[in-house]
Image (cartoon, rainbow, N blue to C red; front, side):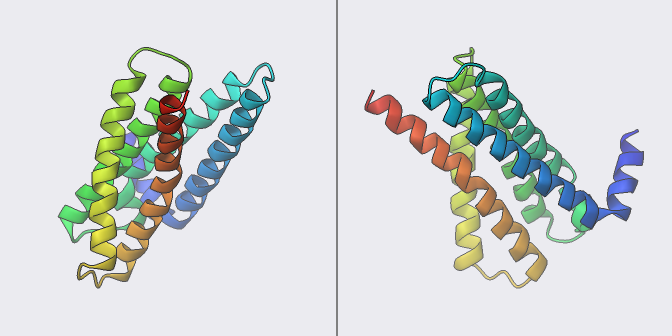
Length: 167
């Protein structure tokens, strides 16, 4: 079944990327609505946040797993491996945020591990994008997209840390 999925993704890479982007937007919207409802003390905010953050984690893990197939990347194995690992770290960070907001066991560990890995990859890719010698335009776009995807997670983590420190 995974081979069939890989062949579908290889033949429809642009379409799959559009679906991934739409899923990410849906996840972010559900999270924002859930957080707004939580701040306003509305009931039933948890299912929206759980669904939104779970969808985001799935999108990031899926994107990381099938990155080379979607964009048909065959060269630069180290950068592809780094991109895959950073998407997995972003998925772990997103699940850590979910676990922490819901007060589930293991949320702090997931958040710490995912955020540390995401932070390291974020700094590496910012360096690679702006100071390194990266001439492949497709890889520049992929790294730029990853940095943009990492920003909301890192901002949410910063918000959680400041709310814990000042609470």
